[in-house]
Image (cartoon, rainbow, N blue to C red; front, side):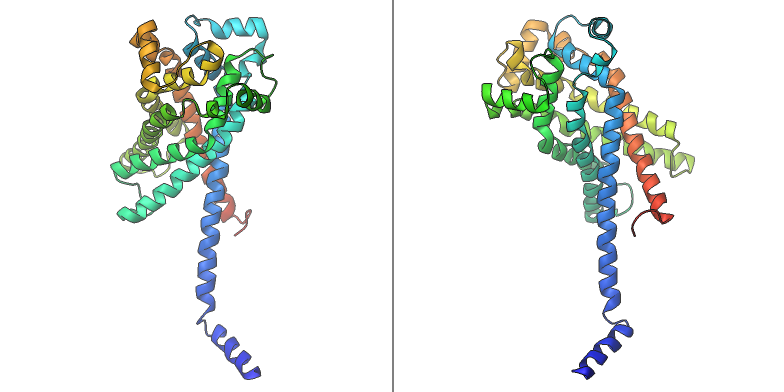
Length: 320
């Protein structure tokens, strides 16, 4: 038996087994660290971006639900106070933090998978896979967090007395309208988020690629990232906006007196009552302000946080 132990030690000393195990373990730790970093960076990016535009976001939801809201922010401030503009932001954070974390992390994973498949591992993907990675990332995040989006929409358009907190919204909707209501508007959400996320990530990644080719700098400055993100948000949200309106109308139908049930039915009712431009594109001008700011902040925060975490790791401040 002693001879067998000595032989095993000798084989380990000669490096026949240990390097393989060490290499595999190192690769696993690297992958785990990458996922955790992406989740954390995405969560922070979503929280910072949504908090920055919360007043505009709440106003946009109400603007899509009511006919007159041109001075809504000012009237809300005078009537309910400054912090009322952030009402529903706690529900927003409960949804946005996991949504953004999942979306950015999924995007990194999909890029790696598609990059390996198309032979572009570690490099910028070709156009079609680049668009596909963003679409799949947005769809994955939306599918996993949709009920929280429904709750946020309800809290943003109802009086404070109606719902006391996030849990209260879940309980009342489930009891009074049924569990299926928590997924009302789910289909237009998925149909809208796929082109929105796809175009947003595609535009941002493409602009960074073009910037690197023309400037010779692999890392854009922060203000350049903000500008690239703003362009990405403008293009992505403009393309998916009508479905965003339909989604909000279906989500808030239970408290507005309407009975929106299908995507086409909702669209027809909106167009017949309010017209195409005033109905399906209501609030788009506000979205052109809110969207680019939010997406620019989100992409920039994610990238800078990723860079910071990598530098901290290289300096030995994080686990190997």
